[in-house]
Image 1 (cartoon, rainbow, N blue to C red):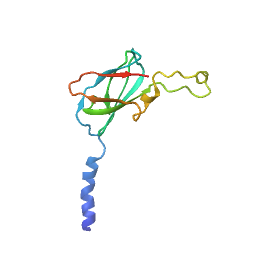
Image 2 (cartoon, rainbow, N blue to C red):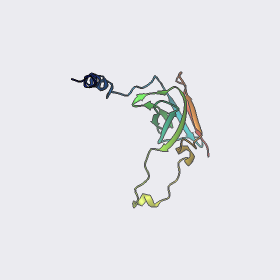
Image 3 (cartoon, one colour):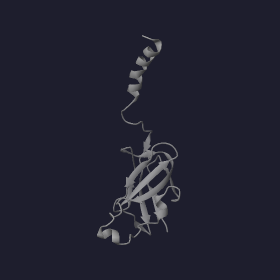
Image 4 (cartoon, rainbow, N blue to C red):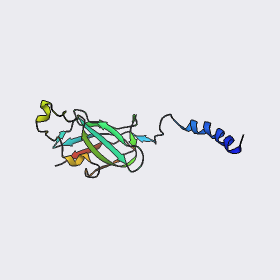
Amino acid sequence: MSPSLHACLLLVPLLAAGCGGKPRIPNLSPVRGVVTYKGSPAAGLNVSFVPASGPAAFATTGSDGTFVLKTNGQSGAVAGKHAICLAPSTPPPMPGTPESKRPLQPIFPAKYANLRTSGLTATVPTDGKPVELILKD
């Protein structure tokens, strides 16, 4: 057996051991918060917290505008500064349906749907203090 083949055969079990399994997630801090627009709770929004490095965290606001972030199915988000964007949790109506003929009423300004234009940022606290997102026109 050649030395290079022998080395390859030794590496296969090591490489296989590193494959699969759950992705490694850094320490997560619990994050809860509320989204309001025009003084009222903003219900049914997908909330995305995107850090400069590390995995993003996601949640959907409830009827009272509150949310609890999760990262890869685990409660919390990586600590530090995050850019934030929002999107409606219900998809637009299918083309050709009666609902699609009615004009869509935006539930919040479109700028919040894009990380580059939302202007929303938050520092994920390590103390569990709630994050308040106040949307403005």
